[in-house]
Image (tube, rainbow, N blue to C red; front, side, top):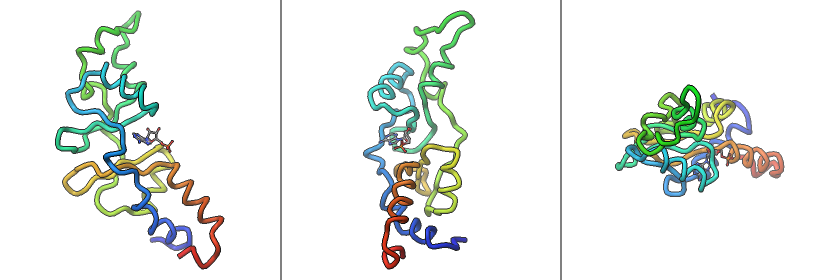
Length: 150
Ligand code: AMP
């Protein structure tokens, strides 16, 4: 239950400040790890979503997970980058915002996650909400005149 002015402020602003799906860097199921590493390096983010050709969300992939999946006993087996697929290395257990965006849940989950994926009831990827968005809203809230806080 949202019980304070900051909560009401978030409720109105969160949905409109989500980074929409078309602006989010992602890789597709079936892409190899070499491609995923290229995308991660080029976009500069440490973790990005894995989607299928229907834009449904399946996982998250990071440079750390890619490196871990090609670690041999004595060396990094770079040749595996070409043969392994993103589904071999992606994280599949992670919190997702489905349907309505509940600001309390979003803020609680962002304590431990740098961003949250938002999907509709069909699991189609809608976009992400990042910590940066929340902090921008907090910053705006603490500088807003009292009458603008509703
Ligand atoms: P930020 O709060 O802006 O630093 O973003 C936190 C995390 O969200 C980043 O490290 C990325 O993993 C992810 N992220 C933010 N913006 C994008 C984007 N446009 N495309 C893909 N991932 C993003």
